[in-house]
Length: 65
Image 1 (cartoon, helix red, strand yellow):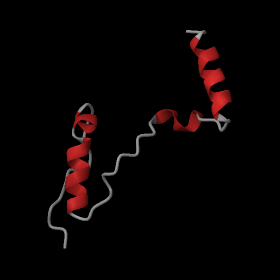
Image 2: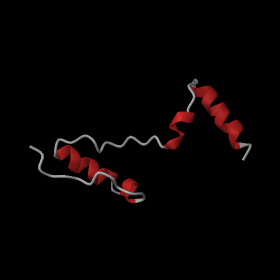
Image 3: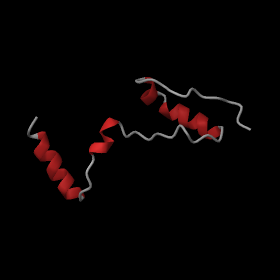
């Protein structure tokens, strides 16, 4: 039985800094809900493409900045 409770929400920048410690503590308790799954708000803007096309696109878009 898991009697150790970890906080439900960790605010940035602590989320990134403490991720390894949180993940290790969670796994030790049998809880895998703290696995790092960083997608962010831009996940819906992704587009499938081959790796070479991705590199070309990133290069072209970086020239626009």
